[in-house]
Structures are given as structure tokens and as C-alpha cells.
Length: 205
Length: 329
Image (cartoon, rainbow over all chains, first blue to last red; front, side, top):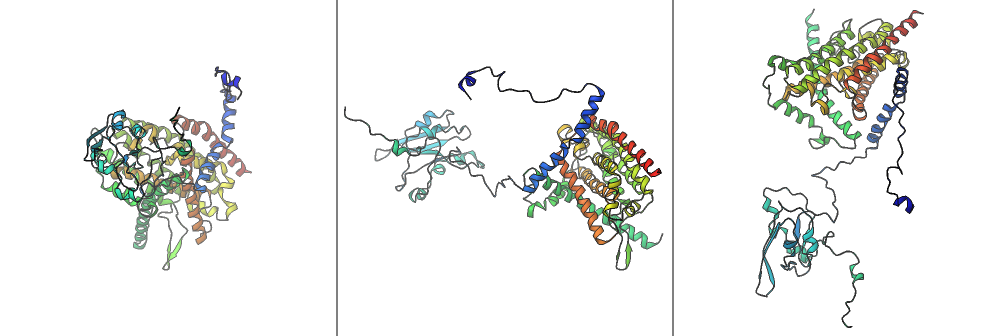
């Protein structure tokens, strides 16, 4: 498409054409002719062939859900997870409170205190999934990649509180130590080839 | 009337009732499977291997559901209507020869309940009487959807019955008998002597009328789900609705048999191969009923009446006249 065509905003006159539909017949003879034409055009058999072809091809698209599951994309935003550091297994969350601040539906609540090493310790962290709209801002804003979205989309439970327990969201420590914990590829994650784009900060002027 | 004949008839009736009640259940399974495959789905898969026990699950559900007779319905008529549909569907089977006669332990068995000499007339009449099911059920239901469905049933009925009768008239003139066995014997000469070759127009007309008779998809107007809920069946629940269902599917099987025997040679010369051929033909016609449901859209009631009165009936009359002229010379 050339620029002139592109800049022509008068969409009513360009790229539109009338579908070739004959006028409705008004005379009796015309109606009769149309009926005969339609009756012998064999369109009904085209329809029969199309469905029979699909039956013979047997290209079934059904996912038998409890037995089979869709592989969801890595960027899918399901129920949150709290990550741990690899090897040491320490919790990544530093208690900065950014996720609580940015959450647009006010569903994250955290309480922190200073522990004996003067590090911030998260004493209480809950996400009200009844309010959460799964926008992904918390995962995006987290500076430590601590809160991420997991792949767990089956949100059926006997109680709403079942997903909001901090310990349930937290990756099991042996998973983190053995390296089985998966990094979240979606919102807020480090983009691929990030190392090559890092530039040295000029310190001396 | 000797006692052996009586026992034989009762056994035949029981066998036909059992076989076709079961087949009606299997018919729903086949319908769901075929429609699913044509729409790239799998259909019922969870109950039993490949969903085969779905029929049993449906049956248990239908039998154990509460039998609701709503307020304001005319209860006696409301209760008897499904029975009419199911009973007439099975009564029509009385004059259909399902297989060639065979001998069992030295006893000659004719797999037809009653070889009456007005067979096809009887079948059409009883199938026509089956329309009292939707008619009375819809009128007694105290439901607007059911009432619309009843009005449609009446309007459609008088349209397609004309076509059915007139379409059959021409083959009747050629065969000279109303018995289905005579029809079969007329075409016993093999593939070339089938009536569909000498009466193709009557065949097409009768198939179209058969679709209207059984209320299958191009003419699925009486209980059209997306327009009038379930039509006459809206207020029914449990096994009463199930009787409508069994009647509908039994009707499909019987009309398939009638088409196969009238036009497609029936069981031919009466050998075992001929019996298998009849089953194959019936299966294909039944499959065709399901096939069209996946492929074709429904017509409106006024379109069906237009089709029957203004197109099919003149063609049927012309067919009769032309057949008469050809037979005369």
C-alpha cells in the first residue's frame, strides 16, 4: 500500500466493492427462474461434502480436559507464586511493599518487621484473590522477581483462603535449592539477551 | 387362529419392541458421535469405553427423574400424549418386513408381524396418527412455546402428508399392491430393478416428505430448539419426554426401513446377503438423517409449506400423470 492510499482517510470510497448479488426478482417468471436455479445449483450437496470431508479427515480438536490439558503460554497470568533464591533457598521478597502500593485493586496486604539481622522480614503477606484482577502489575514492579504469576489456572477450592496463604504461594525450599523452580517469563521478567544490553555506568567525568 | 401363530406373533412383537427401543437409544449415541465428528469434536467419551455407556446413563436419568405434571395443564391429555407418539411409532412397525423369512429350528419365521395387503397405507396412516402426540401434548401443556409448536405441527402435517401420498402413488401404480413384501418382490431382480431408477422423482419426494414426517433437520420445526425451546416437549420431564424421544428415533428407523424397501430394493431375493444389504441400506439412510443435520440449515414453517404445496405437490401430480401415460402405452 502506498503512502497516498494510506493517508486517504476517506474509507467509504476506497477498498470497498459491492458483493455481486443480483436484484430480487419482481415478476413471477423471474421468481420461478431463481427458484429453479437455486434448486439445481447443488449447494446442498456442497454442504454435505464439507461435513463428510471433516468426518473423514478426523481432525479432532477436542481437549479431553481432566486427562489432557492445554499447555498455557509462559506469559499467562494465573495464581501468584513467591519465588526463592536459587541455591540458598532464601526468600526473594525483601518486603519493599511496592506490590502492595501498585496493586490497583488493593488486594495485596503485607506486614513487615526487622529481623535480628536487621533485614526486613515479611511476617504476613496475603493476596485477596476475590479482588485480584490478575493485571500483573505486582510481578512487573517487583525489583527482586519475587512475586510472579504461576501456571496454576485451576482455581477451584473449598475456600477462597486456600490460595492466599503465603506459605502456599511460596515455592517449596527444596525446589529452589535443586534448581527446579521455574522463572516466570511474563510481565516483569528479565527479557532475553539482557546481559548483552547492559552498559557500564559512567562514573568518572 | 392356532396357538402357534399367536405365540409367534407375540414373540415378534416383543422382539421388535425391545430391539427398536434399544436401537432408539443407540440412535442417540450414533447421532451425537456422527455430529461430533462432523464438527471436529469427539462426542460422549467419559462414560464407558468411547462413551458407549452414555446410553445407559441417559436411560437411568430419564427413568429416575421426577415426573412433573405442571399446573394448568390438562392432565389426562398431557399424560397420554407421549404414549401416543411412542405407541404409533411402534405400531407402524407391524407391517414392515425387517428381514427375509428364515427357518429357525425347522420352523419358518416371517419377520413381519402382520403381512396385511394394505401395508404401506397402514404405515402412513399410523405414522400420521402419531402426530396426535405433539398435537395433544402441545395443546394440553399450557405453554406458549408448546402452542406454537402445535400450530406448526398441524400446518406442516397437512402439507407433507399430501406429498407423501402423491409421491407414493406412482410406484404403487407400477407395483400394483400396497404390501411391502410385494414391493420387495417387485424389485427382487437385483440392482437394476430398484424402483429408485424407474421412479427417481417419487424417491426424492418421499425422502423429503420423510424428513418432514420424522421432523429431522431441514424440517425440524415442531420442536425447534433455538426458536421454540423444545416445542411440545417443553413442559415434559423424565420418561414422558423420553417416550417422545423414543418415538422420534423409532420413527426414524422405521421410515428408513420403508424407504429402503419401497425404493432401494429391500432385502432383494431373500438370501442372507440380501438381509445384510437391507441393513446396510437402512444404516445409510439413518446416517443420512444425521448427516443432513450437520450440514443443512432449517427452513421456516412458511417455507416448508411453500415447498410442499407449490413445488413438491405439483411435481408429484406430474409424476403420477407421466407414470400413468407411460404405463398406458
